[in-house]
Length: 127
Image 1 (cartoon, rainbow, N blue to C red):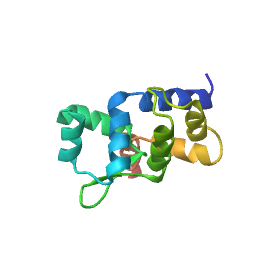
Image 2 (cartoon, rainbow, N blue to C red):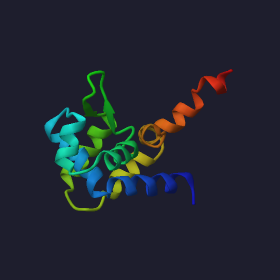
Image 3 (cartoon, one colour):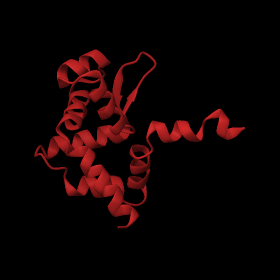
Image 4 (tube, helix red, strand yellow):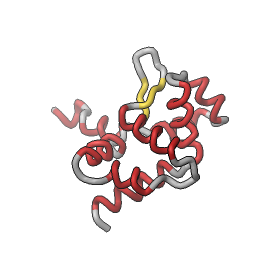
């Protein structure tokens, strides 16, 4: 499987998960939300919500006031999902985000989880 197909598969898995779609839809329609507000609206426990938020890394970010927002990539995903409200991610959205050029940048934002970035920026590795 090629790199583009792999990105498409991972992105489709993210976008077709009902809880993650709900998080994107909530943040897109309501704007910023606190952790407590998201947990209440999604009906998810802390551990499960952490798991989903990690999966949405690159689409969702947390500001200095600890409120969650959609990133530019997340706003693009929200607008496309709103135009295609079915349970499946629109194929053109997956291609746009996972393809080459501008979409590749979005895919890199989405698929570089915080844990990977932290591992490479660890002071032990830099020493």
